[in-house]
Image (cartoon, rainbow, N blue to C red):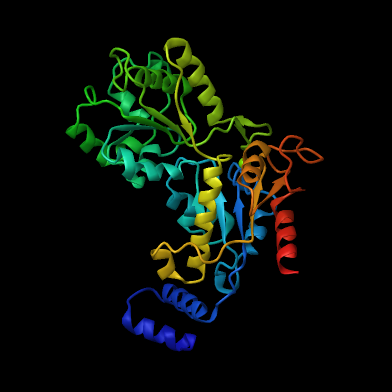
Length: 385
Ligand SMILES: [Mg+2]
């Protein structure tokens, strides 16, 4: 069907605005014609220090990403963002990145530090009371993963008078997440917060108020999930990543979730007879790279319109010859890719944490480049020459 005919058919059956119909018609037409070959490689991009710094694209990232799309903006080469960051649902992060970078990014293509928490909702904590910590919308993230009884630490703390002895000196506003989620109100109506044990704590993103969070977490963890009561068995504690430092907008590195973990652990171990137990997700955990490979296969299938295979979970069939990990942090991105082994190939950029002239001494990458754009030149040259 010619595009003009397709457009007329759509127009006659719909009340949608002309411009929208034209976009839909053009894309559908493109999809009919555009059948790129499935490439045998995929790419995982770290975000902070590679693609953006703060909220500014760096290293020619916009141009680099555009090269992964073919005619009509259809994805030609499968890629994901593999970040230890987070704090917002994958769908929201995908639309933020799409706007910032000028390409169409699917929620499926965003793998955040806390994405693996999703797997714990169904299997362990679906209806159990859990507390979510961190900047952004930690409780919304967890609720969307299927945790039905989750409270942010902001909201949880607000029920306990005097739990933060410094609160009167903190004159900032608690974010709007509490007000936004009517589900929280339903939860508190259904349960008595003072008698229901917290079964697990999830550090979803960077703690905003270390002093309050360390105090309240010590309360929850030492008492078996009932602050103010006697000591009990420690609830499970999960961190979305263990990054000591990361590259933000400031010229030198900032303290990350790993630094918060060290502070919490040091204090907990001084006030409690048993050492703190916890699980860290995020890079360089090899599990993250295995998962990224599976997601890249799904992206590959979905970009080649093999929706039935995606729906049936048929992620096999077309293994990748090479998977490129492009990162700025040797201890996280490069160490992780090296540990994951074949088919991972690590590329280290100089736009973030790493600034060295030569390769990193302890965790050398397979390739060191200045920017992500240079990394893309190398990959496309190697794959298509
Ligand atoms: Mg980084």
